Image 1 (cartoon, one colour):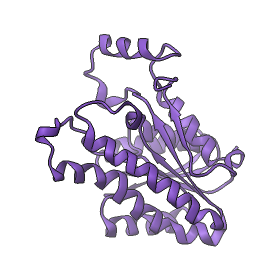
Image 2: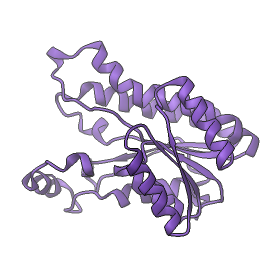
Image 3: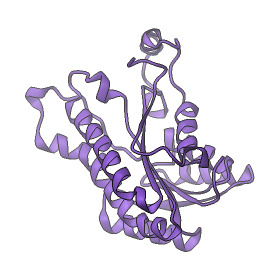
Image 4: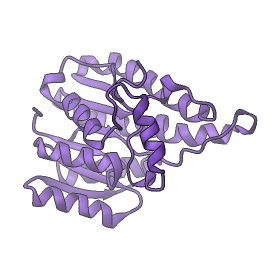
Length: 247
């Protein structure tokens, strides 16, 4: 499905990012596995990709820091080739904060990952995409912008801003052959949800029309399609992957 090229997946040492990296590698992409913490886990992801016949390398970088992002894209380009696809998946802490306790710093903590980081990454990768006349950008969002749960206003506001970025960038970068889309998962339990009780998972799944919890492969499949040639005429869209939970 995918055209040959180099894809940079941020936050790819575990969780959704790791599954996305493996899925794209299996589809023929050369994968830059970015991580900030967890070098061993990142190496395991890349080693697994190579063992399966794919191509991958690991790159440490803080994707919220401008100099670090510039150095990251330069290093990927030098080692693997020009970055023509970008999956902005990296995230940070996501605290639940009641409005009476909400501070501007709470907002900034979310905007750092969901507005600043994608901006830095796209700016750094854009010259190569323009030169190639083709590029793919996928921002990993959330269906929380639809659910609007109490206590999550900073997170929801930042994720809503992410949608605005994608729509505006899609219009701006379309003439250069670059598509920009958002994949918005529902709740997909990964390593950081290990302590969530089974009863909570079952209760959530009971609310989903498809009567199951989301899996990392569900999200990775949507990303895979958006990076493929079959999605070449899809841009500025938000693809919700939550089993119909927010219908």
